[in-house]
Length: 443
Image 1 (tube, helix red, strand yellow):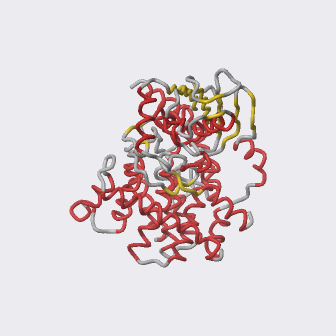
Image 2 (cartoon, one colour):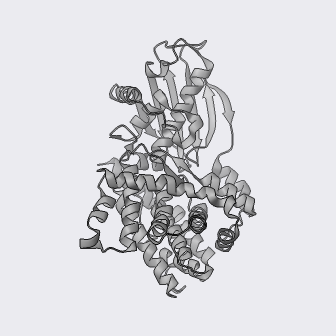
Image 3 (cartoon, one colour):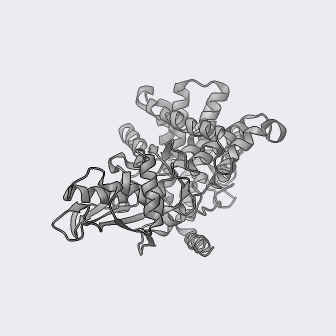
């Protein structure tokens, strides 16, 4: 990849997201469907979305359902896909992408809760091969809007990327249809040639002015961490670690990084209205890939340029691994993200390319088997575990320790090791994924 293509890849995969991205994808699809109705009908009142009798049917893939069942929805005090869908209908703005719900108002939240209570939202599992899939169909049932259609209705479909709308329709007429991300990736597969070596070289040599935008990680994710430490969000994992740092965890960098990173996850998963800087479609992964690196920079007063290069390295390593793993799987995303942050820590401590590769292998041999059992407040505990492993793997790599290729899934070639991680998570754990969802649905 050229430097220009690498920067484009980062900008595509590292972006602000308000709320857990699976319910946000649902809100985005619903918002788009409602906007289509508005664009194709006469509305006597600009605030019609807050008053209309709507029927909202949302079909989602199993992984979207798994990650949307127990996670907090920003500003509502509620969890789950129904309220996310309702918010998308009454106030969502699809032009804002993963920040579709950034215009929340108390009236919108109240109306969304009414729609849920009235049984207007219907969620079902779609029969689809796509791991990331949302089809939101919205119908206006009370004459609030005027249309040549007796029953104005529209749908929007999202596939493979949380903000990739691939098809829209109004009154059974297709308005737009494009290829899914998976199809585009299959078409471009032969052109993907990024390696850890390329990532390292780019992070070390790219002009600072070309990569300084990545410091947005610090602005957004550090704000979330501070919010998590101030409030009583979720399980208060990060706050508890910080409050017990001297007595239990020790006043060291590992505990500091664990506390800050988990606090950001606490706030995000429990419904904070602050956005996260996401990575590969996940806010928690964006937090985990960046906050340990940011914590190191804060504790040891690292300058902005060095921090930016470390964040470029950590984000790109995570993006690279996700290329082989896919956006959603049975493998916990913090495995990938904390592998990226381990590389960033190695860089900040003056490590070499070979030591970055060693850190990746150390992570692969440590927590690769951690499963994803849905997005929820308990994710902050997995995030803290990932950070601990990242620091451990970085320190071992810097001291010359690397898990050998005779162990498990580790190969001499770091690229083959990464491909093994992807194969395990995307293909090897399919049965695990289905079993986890069955357990969750039967509770």
